[in-house]
Amino acid sequence: MTTSSRIRVGSAPDSWGVWFPDDPRQVPWRRFLDEVAEAGYEWIELGPYGYLPSDPRVLAEETGRRGLSVSAGTVFTGLHHGPAVWERTWEHVASIAALTRDMGAGHLVVIPSFWRDDKTGEVLEGDTLSAEQWRHLADGTERLAREVRERYGLRVVVHPHADTHIDTEENVSRFLDATDPDLVSLCLDTGHYAYCGGDSVKLIRTYGERIGYLHLKQVDPAVLAGVRERGTPFGPAVAQGVMCEPPLGEPRLEPVLAAAAQLDVDLFAIVEQDMYPCEPERPLPVARRTRGYLRSCGV
Image (tube, rainbow, N blue to C red):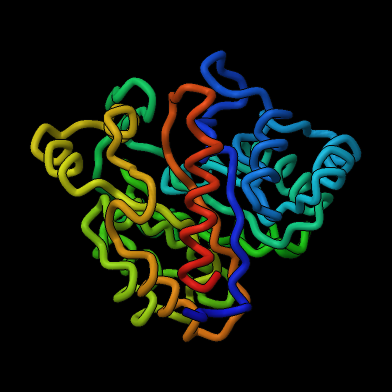
């Protein structure tokens, strides 16, 4: 099938089991770059800041000689806490945005802070926001998007994520309705949205003009049922295999990509195969098979 030549496929350190800047259970960054190119990808994300070299000259040399380009950087924010966290937030964002810009990318993926720790499962705060916190979140995200665009020329795409306050269909819709579409777009992660009960095709059809970026991922419905029954935190759920290799899980990616293609805009679709922690030999074969599967989907 032919989906769209305007959808550019890539991968990310996440697909190699990388969640942290430095962790002995993760593959070294050079191995990730070697293998992501070997698997047939030309676009990557930066992943957790500090995992790949933060000197743009070094990183440009390392990616360039492997035929790789950078599509986006990623930041984590707790903007629902209000103006008191702005300076700390900007300090975190600025260095990552600078590297993202220097690598020629155009997007900054913004992930809301977790209400429980993704590694330990410790509850850090309540899982719902007050009306005031929603206002802080919307206002802070718009301010961040404006500053990032003006200072670094990047487009902010907000990533709904399990165990954050932007997760379910209801919360994603509330966030989108509260923010300026000229400033704030969405990074739709198909796996996280399904994990939280959402329908990616419906979201694309309802809020198509807000879709600025895609993460391609699937959940194993049998594992997810157990996760929901037990209230398992996201990190341990990943270790149990809740995110599975396409096309073995949900949602089906063919209709998601077809719906995205109908938007007729340039989109990145970055594979994120959550599997921290994993054996170092596991990611490359999965990545090869996933790239082949996506070609069969027309991208």
